[in-house]
Image (cartoon, rainbow, N blue to C red; front, side):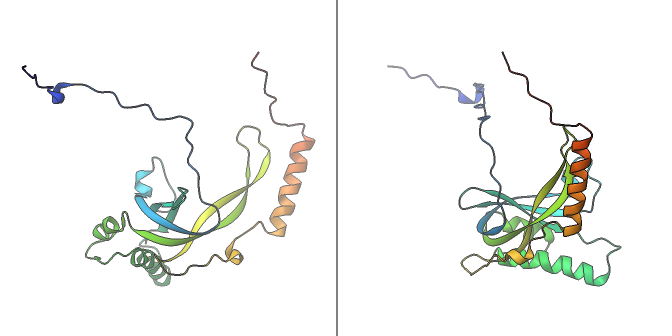
Length: 192
């Protein structure tokens, strides 16, 4: 019996379709053991015009996603601010087990795949629903601090930033104004 070669290098394949019903789940405030899975910078974001940053993507043991953002040192930063930015990033990298700080990129590369303990806190803010214009309270989850994998880390809710009483009053006022104007969410039409 003669066996013919497959010539797999010449065969075209199709990528399997991504499942559209899989939605990423994100961390909430609390302490987590995380694996560093990626890094992006403000330069990677199209049309981003805010302060420059470096952001590490992390995934928890129970597969929740988070981001640890660090602000980049700018020439206009006062010395204490520049020092704080550098120290907070280096502490994160040291806690991740990074040892090679010959260049920033080498340190960032070494952090990939490492485990670290991370605390996230929340900050509330006033915003509006894009579709209806209705005022709402938004909640942003932020990286707060870290510790080495295997060491103790404690979440402290005192570091959360809920809306101030003045902002809550402003929200109530805006909501009353919105409701008085007759604006309400659009009713969905039945599909039949």
